[in-house]
Length: 297
Image 1 (spheres, rainbow, N blue to C red):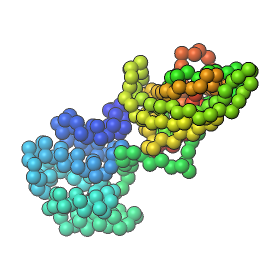
Image 2 (cartoon, rainbow, N blue to C red):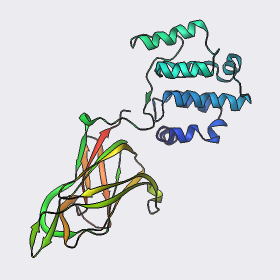
Image 3 (tube, rainbow, N blue to C red):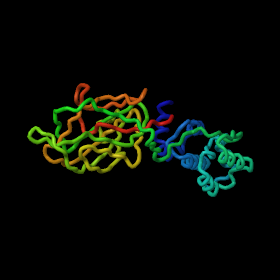
Image 4 (tube, rainbow, N blue to C red):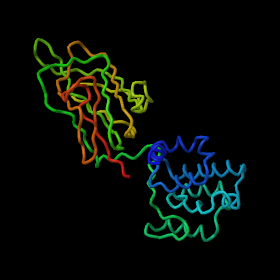
């Protein structure tokens, strides 16, 4: 059950738009509605419930009687009071006549006061993350892989990969690359910028050898020190492996010099593990630091 709830939580929109969701029984729908957090919006969950009612009732036009017959008390588990006023107004225009006057009054009171305790509908408690979970720059948790700088140059390849996994659900918001130098005649020289193409893929641990699902495509210019901020944070989930692939055409003799950790404890209970064919604790690579946000659960 925990495994199924985890799949639903972190792939909510995929689950809600599936044919199996439309065919599920009321007990499954109840379980989803009573989960503490979901990665969708309130409006998306409610619209999915309406699609479920249409499916099980075989009716395209819904009335209060049809909704009450199919949902029963589950109608009051739906997060109407957690929607924005604009979202609720749009829903009411599409499905007018579903609410009694007392139900309207209670929903309005939920909108009006965060301390209001409803008698009919469930009080606000579910956490909705939306399509792109919100990034909080003031709450950044840094995963610094650095052990030390070294005089041993590691020349940059045309394709550099960094693969990692975590034991907790977190958000990835930025990638910092290792300091780069030009190594000529045993001397380190400042670099010039050159472009790199960045791809991040997600694979289940059991199938990590495959290509994986692309969760980010982008470009950046590499020089002495680069912090690459993602336009939308990426949800990093336990049980999955994430590969950062950086493709470039570096000038000759360009190298990095950091020795890096294979595992980092970034906060109590949160561990980031870096995967490599290299045996031992000392690793090398182009990515030296990752920035995360903790996910509220």
